Length: 173
Image 1 (cartoon, helix red, strand yellow):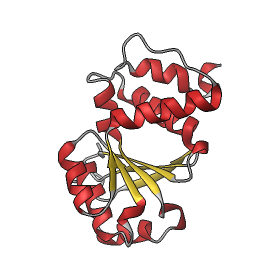
Image 2 (tube, one colour):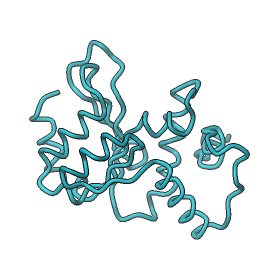
Image 3 (cartoon, helix red, strand yellow):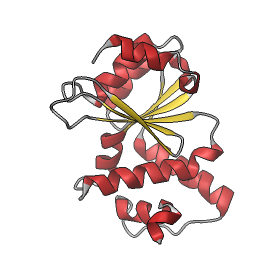
């Protein structure tokens, strides 16, 4: 990971006020055995895309990179959501921490993770933090208020439920 990449992100106007989500932590907290992982990533991104219009912040999801040949992080856009894959030598946690360390206003960033150690470190750096569970309850409540009640899942830790509820219209065709 190279600091100049963080600096490029830091000064991008879309990265001023944001939710910074620890992607795999979010997924594995909901479903400890998500198979296939690509479907779980898509479900998470679709969930965020469905609620993003109700928030006045950008959403950034950081995943641990899996490609051992990548020395740099990669960034892509999914329906207005910034998706970052770290280099294989760096965890999403370390990327998030380094990003906060170099950001000029970490108080404008809310880190979403159920990793207590990461949340504590981020809080110490001045960022706001929220657990995955609390974030899910909040967006579910906001979605319910905006679009009517959703059916409660049989099992709360079932990512396939979230995928069905928040899947894009293209996926259901």
